[in-house]
Image (tube, rainbow, N blue to C red):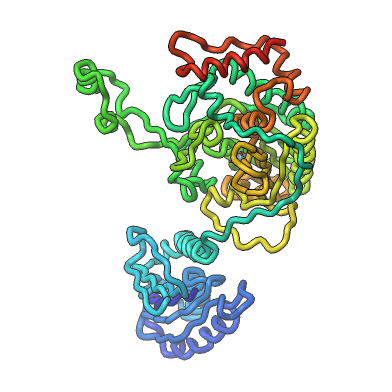
Length: 532
Ligand code: SER
Ligand code: ZN
């Protein structure tokens, strides 16, 4: 990437000839030294390619790389000139204008013409030239230029790594456990026997029997994994102001999957009179009509579930006494608008999860992750007796914030990244085929991905990292049912103990529910096994 522009410096009075004679020396100092500072390679720094001084204007053509950018170079030029002209000739700098600004890229990229400062974009011979409008000193001091560069760099990376950026490397897997795979889809069974009922796309009501199983599994996970490691429960909001998503990156990375919320325009019920009248008479409501009564969305619904944790510590200064901080939240659902592949309780729009979060110095964060990893393995292997595997994958926090990660060349799990836990779903097909495995949970260390934008600080200036882990309740239960089936005699001992800890709730059986004869028969079979 090359940046070029013409810097026009307006002085408080015309330059005397001695000052004009000084110019080559000043430019030499800038080119040889000051404009090269902070960049290892010359092409990453800045160079004045032409200059001209006339009356009270100095004009310089500047060419830069991305380490000492055009904006930074312009401000450095101003500093040096202000010093030398000010001291020697009592001449001040009135105005700084950067004209004919061009960003020249070796790739073809598209960028919104609606962005402030963008004048035009042309493409030729595989290169893209972005022309900016004139910029003044105040514009140069704002990080807009930097952010534009970051946007361009991200877009370039996406072009380069695009589809192949996803990585998946197996870290560990269980022994082969299942001898006689169950071929029935538990999602279908649950719906047929009426334990779940679809309210709308990707959204279900779980009746008491299924809720009982989910609760047993969650409690087991808390007792075996979360609580022994000293995590404490907190309650996080499930509807977040937009600014939070700007900082976590979600609004940039996954805006197409987010569910938003709007407030009513007025609190005065009489303002809704027309709409209410219409509902009385028509007995229907059109979303388009409703929209007229709503403000634009100002919230987004819980997506990653750990966002409020980072928000809570925003601008806080933490000392060693409080670190590490270890919390978990299981107070409500997460929402993801998934366009395709929605299936049963396996892939839904509204789901439930135990979100485990921690914050500390890098070594603390890594140690906590390692302990969790150990407990997770024990939980999958010894408690649930699953066929499982874990893999080093594209970090969710890059994926969800639209950051493209370059090729992963070696595996070092002590750097920011994500480990996924997966379970084999026999009903989908052979274990040898990756598409028959389901991600049931993950565990990550984020480095400073969140402590930086939320400015979470340590009193002695130490670096702070965060980590999080998501236990997707529905998916864990589904994996268990897919591998063990609905006969409680085949369920893992410890899980069964938790299920039996309180009476099993009644299933809904009525004239019309479950809907089919087969469903009713199947339900009776399942219930008969629950008679312990
Ligand atoms: N927040 C993490 C995720 O969204 C873990 O739940 O994947
Ligand atoms: Zn998280």
